[in-house]
Image (cartoon, rainbow, N blue to C red):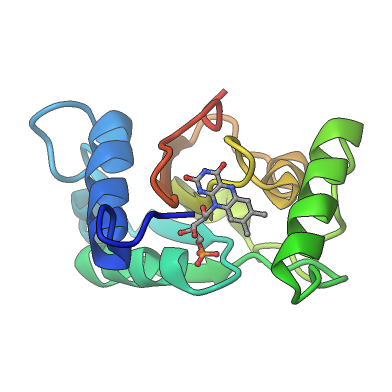
Length: 162
Ligand SMILES: Cc1cc2nc3c(=O)[nH]c(=O)nc-3n(C[C@H](O)[C@H](O)[C@H](O)COP(=O)(O)O)c2cc1C
């Protein structure tokens, strides 16, 4: 979705990392308060859960995981999305409009022990993919610190945080 010459893949990734993390963590901070120290002091876990189709979000997820020594969890659907891009756009749009929540191939074991959850996803149709709603519906995140992060093709956050 980026325009050649105006928005490189690397540029899109770096912009995406800077914007959503800044939004999620608050101006001036680079890590969520207590995320790494809580893990060191009390053993409370930090989890980086992410959905990716073409790998961009996985790159960011791994960087966060490495920096915070956090566990990684890749969100997968039971039924994979179509390989063909146009078909995938159509399926994603149909799921968004209908509110369908695609079943997950697996859930996070022992989500209760996670104090902070980073949740990463690509922007699809100006919002989060439906699989992210599936994730939120099947994991009780109440009382946890949720830090969303995204990658996108150049059009920004859209309404994904809502
Ligand atoms: C179905 C679909 C819809 C997309 N919609 C948008 C969009 O609305 N805005 C945008 O900036 N990028 C959009 N993109 C581009 C992706 O957000 C971008 O390539 C992202 O980095 C892909 O992440 P991934 O490699 O982790 O799957 C879309 C991509 C797909 C496949």
